[in-house]
Amino acid sequence: MKDLQCFAAGTTGKASVLALVLGLPVACSTRKQPVTHHIVVADISGRIEPASRHEMLEGIAAFAVTLRRGDKLTVIPITGDAEADSQGRILQFAVPTRREPYDEDLRRFGAQVRERMVQLTSEAERAPGDHTDILGTLDIVADEIRSSPAGESLDVTFLSDFIQDGCGFDFNTDPRLGSQGRAEALAHQECQQHVARPTAVNLGLLRSRDLARLSNQRRRNIQRFWKSCMEARGLTPELHIDGMSLLRGR
Image 1 (tube, rainbow, N blue to C red):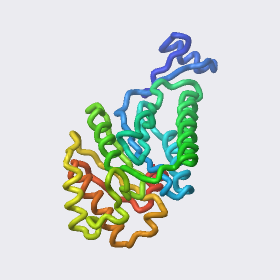
Image 2: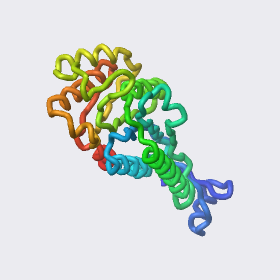
Image 3: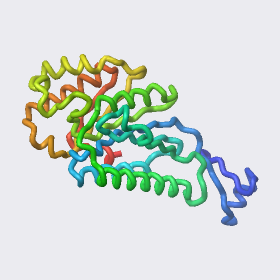
């Protein structure tokens, strides 16, 4: 009980212990721990296979209920134009810090996240976008990183096929993605804005119809682009072939 602060009907100490013995409602708050801000960037475009998109959003809802009290969760959908389309679509949640009897507060939190993920799934199925602006979304992530308090730990995850095909780019056909050297040069050209805080970033691949059509060489060049792009912005990327493992393995 050392890590809990409990009260019942406005009492503390012996009265709280008595309330526990008698089975009276007692509310508790856990001792303060370092907060982790989890940022999940989710590709909900029509290019992602529907089953993968559904599994991803279900996975985010399941992941949310594993977070510690006080942790934060930000879900940023990848759209065709990040600057124009993301307003009002970025979802932000905070795990309750004050514990209620039977963890009722956590149940409400989990239900809230699941409800928003169901809404996001419905929106994606009703009007899936054809294009993705991952570079623009990276700018939004950089803003989230810069605005996070210094005492917060950061956990950043991208879930996508990583094929940028919006805002003047199409990685499916762009000749600059034809070789590793040109891909790296393009990354350094487009990813010059350095984030204020070094952060590790997980890059999780999702199945998509476009990714299946690309040659293995172009896929590797696209992966090299994003690795170089993240590093140019002061981030430390790690590629995961099975993107969903990033949600299941927490």
